[in-house]
Length: 424
Image (cartoon, rainbow, N blue to C red; front, side, top):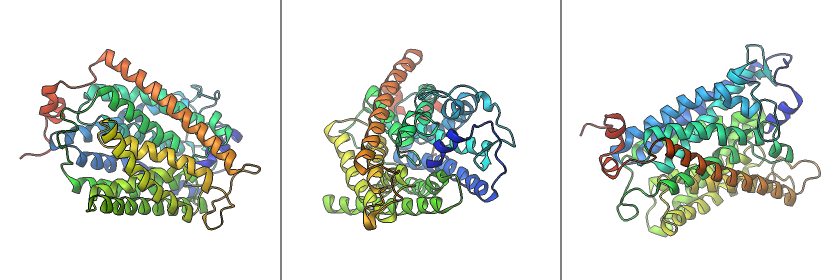
């Protein structure tokens, strides 16, 4: 998405461009479908298989419902907050209810309606990722209320900071497809939610293994494929930038998966399917902010780093700090997003020989770019953590955040939806 800030700065959204580029439009149409496919059914199945059988429908329902409520809120105000003209921190409401988004309005050389829809799919998957932090214990009403407020208070403003002409974009932050906007915000939001709600009853003494690894691996495969639209589509064109973004995305995913697998094999004696697919997601999350800036060799290093660092982050979060981030959202997405955002400032440089990327801006050194990246990471973490905590507390005043002990033992499927995932 490196073109977004430039486009919004140079071309007012209500100004018509000369015409639609059919190839670019076709590619972004395809990418939009791929990104939605990441949430429904990809993330839903990935998360669904990781929880216990009594909670499978609750996770699927949460992902499905978040997709619906976020879509409506993006129409009403989310898109306008993120991408309309405004200040350095917050867009105005000139695009309320997609005002001015008509068949002929363009962003660059693609329809603005398509651009808004493509961005909507990013807005959908980000709060859906947070589900993994509070899985198996948060009330359905609280999930919906938290996700709705979080979208407008956290996701949309930070999107404006980075991609909508806000202060981080103008500072020169490198975030091609969502290291700060998606992965850090989701990871930090999930960590805060896990801490506020507390651990699942029985954690960590009671084993809580995934109930269906076949489902999880199926969902993971969908995420891998869908990520091509996530990163490749962020070029907003069918060109070499998109092709390179997909190439480095694939390399980092493969490197993350294999690194995690062999690391686990050496450390514990056996490689697991769960570890391998988790490493893949770590590699994908890490390459996301850098995917439009780095080369293949740099992506390989980033994927390896993701496998090692995120692996250890999972152990530290759960075993040392005893935080029940149920499905490892922060150590995989949060840590991966931080790692990728920082390494983008290194491997984007054109002066690294085989490991060179597409080059930093004129007059910008690796050191100064890393400084900008660090500012982006730190401010995103702090704002997301504080805002997420406040939102959870406000939601807690409106409805109970968590199920009772008896309800949690019975399972969210029956308690929340009066249905079962399986007839056993």
